[in-house]
Length: 339
Image 1 (cartoon, rainbow, N blue to C red):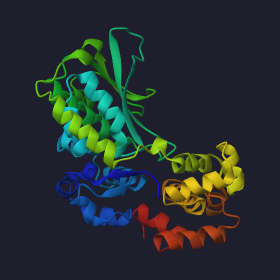
Image 2: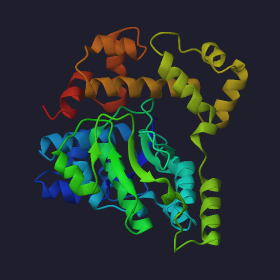
Image 3: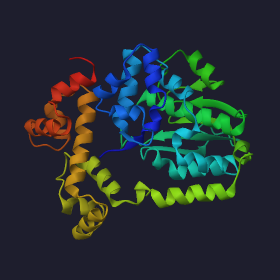
């Protein structure tokens, strides 16, 4: 299974879609997302389907600022138990370190961090929000939702986010530039290397009134005890190796073991210990590659079959029917709202 995101990310989705005259359940069905995701915040949703749905809603309902609007109905509690650890932190820097360490609990494809100012100012740092494009393709609406929520949380925790200099987004504006200025309260630049809030460095030392070392320790202990960082799983590295090589080299145990500098039997044992196998991961990677290109591009199906490591287009067709219960061409039409 590819990267997931907690259903809490869709908090407010149903209400907003209805306000715009749409049918939220129809959108979830179109992208093969369980309607339960609209009410169960602890459930998991494939992040690619989640993001494609946000982009589709924006286009279909003519709401260019959909991500910004959705963020307005969310807050730190979207992050579940991670929110407790963040709120109980002593300073902004400690809260960001905690968020960076455990963001994978919300989604392993997303990350936040503190980086040098992209404009080279020593008194400024960039609070970055990134998506791992090895896990899932870029989504403008999802990126705006994430950065806008990051901003809302920062404002709430710091009592106004004094020291915010500007905001940066990787894509070109989806809405009038004035809409972004209205939301963030500062200038926004587009086509930048990363999504970021540029803030004065001194903000990192700001203390939280609600700091509680005991609660933070309990929350961190819970997160550590109940969630394994994907970077520590060999299956994560196998998945990445396959994603980079499938379609070009054989997806066989010996080849993947060599790429990871492991003995084939050792790799087999470690995957079994993680309750998976090379065959299962190959199927997941093929599914991610195939469905991504079927639903987001106009590439010929034969080319997509080759990219996903199928010898023939018929192999792709059989696999898509097994995964989605329909043909590749029907899936393409369904996700684009044409039947």
